[in-house]
Length: 604
Image 1 (cartoon, rainbow, N blue to C red):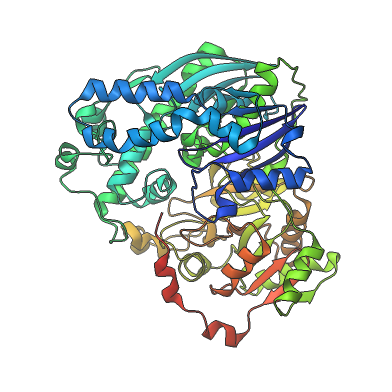
Image 2 (image 1 turned 90 degrees about the horizontal axis):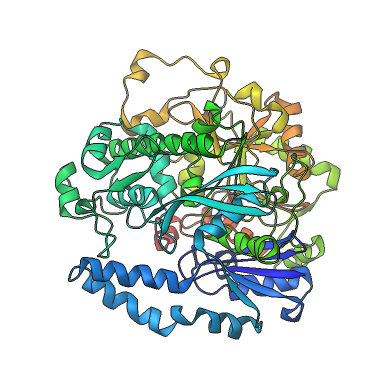
C-alpha cells in the first residue's frame, strides 16, 4: 500500500511517499521551483516523486494532508473575534485567501492528484509522527515545538510501537517558537527562515536581557508550561511580530534588514537563546518525569535549534535523542504519510533499536552519471573523468591545497541541512576559510559559522561528546586539547571582533564560543562522503572538513547538475565534482565573476 503525504500553503511545502511503512521519497517543493521556502501546492515535487518511484497517481492508495484546515480557520476566526477591532487589516488580508483556496484544500488535493481517498491529521500529530516513527526507538517521549499549527504550539506525548498518545499541549497565542521568531524579526532577520541566524549570532552577545524577558514577556512554570504577555507582541493581530511597547522595553526599533548588526541585536540573540534553552530543559525534565524511559524524539521548528539540542543531550536527562532532520513544516509531509500508515490503517511497527528508518535523509532524486556527462558535453563544459577509486584521493588533495569544492552526488537530502550529497566543502584547518566561504561563495553574513563533517568514529577525539550526530542537529564543544591559546588582548574583543580569532586546530568550524554544529558521517550510510573524509584524514592527519549547503543566499540547496554548475560558475568556488566528473575554474573564468549579481538575492 502506497501513501502520499503532503504539506503545503504555509511555508516549506513538500511531498513524501511511503510504501508499506518504508520511506520511498521525500523532498521540498523549493528545490524544484528554485523559490526558497515555497509554500505552494508541491506540484513539481510530486511529479519528481512519481518519476523517481516509477509510479502514477493510480498506484497511490491514500493522500494524507499534514494539518486540519478547518481547525486552523477556527483559530483564526476566534483570534480575530477575541482581539477585535484590532487585527482588522490582517483579517482583511487573510480571509480572501481562505475563502478562495484554503477552505477547499480537500478539493484542491483531489484536483491536483486525482486521488479520492484523502485524510487529514493535526499539525502537531504530523510532527510527532515524523519524529517517532522513523526513529530507532520502540518507546519514546515525544516533544514537538513550533510557531503554531492549528491551535497547538507545543505538545508532549508518548510513542509506543505504532501508537501516539499526546498528553500535554500549549495553545496559541502562547508559543515558544513565536517568541523566538519575535526576536528574529526585531534583530532584522526574516521570520520562518532567519531563526538559525539568530542562534548563530547569540555567542557574539551577552545575555543581558534574560531577566527582562522573564519579567515582562513570558511567565514560565517549573514544568516548562508558559504564557506570553501579549501586550508586547503584534503577531496575533497585525502584520508584524512585535509592537511599540516591545520597542520601548528594549529602547530601540527593529533593525532594518541588511543594515549593520548592533550590539543590542547580539545581546538580544544571546538573551532569547538562553531563555529558550532554559524552558526546553524544563519541558524535557517534565517529559522524563511523566513518561519516563531512555528515549526522546523531537520535531517542530524549534527542534532545529541545535544549540539547545546539544545541551539537552549532554545533560543525559534522556539517554538517547532522535531529531527529525526535516523538523519544520516540510517534515509534516513525511509525518502525515507515516501517520496514515500506522495510526489510520493500524499497521504494526518493527524497529531494532539501532539504525533509524530515514536512511541518512537521502530521500530526494538523483542523477545518473550518463545524465551528468550528457549535460557537460551538451554545454561544452570541460571536465576530468575520474575513476571511482581516484575521487577521494583527488578531492583530499584539493582540500589540502586550500581549495573549495562543490560536491554533488547521490540522492538529494530531505530537510534544511546538506549532508554531503549537495554540499560545499573545504579545509577546516584553514584560518581564512570561514570568511572566504561566507563572503565570496555563500554571499552571506560574515558572522555565520560553518559545520564540520567528520568520520563518525572520530567524534570523541575532537568534540566533548561522542554521541553520533548524522543530521547536523547537535552542537558540541571542541575538546580542550584541540583548542589554541587565546591572548588577553584577543579575549578582550567584543561583538563581531571575536570572529577573527583562531580558537582551535580546526578554526574554520569553531564558533566564537568554541562550539560546532557537528555532522558525523557513517561509512555505511554515506560511503562516498566518508571515503573523501577518510582520504583527507590519511593525507593530513585531520578527520574533519567544512561542510556547508550547496547554495547561495536567497536560493534553495541545488537540485540538479544545472543548478550546481550555475552556483559554481557565479561564485569563487575552485572545483565542482558532479559524481566522478571534476570541473576546474580557470583563472580567466574568475575574472568574469560579477559580484554585483548577488544583490538581486535577498537576505533571508
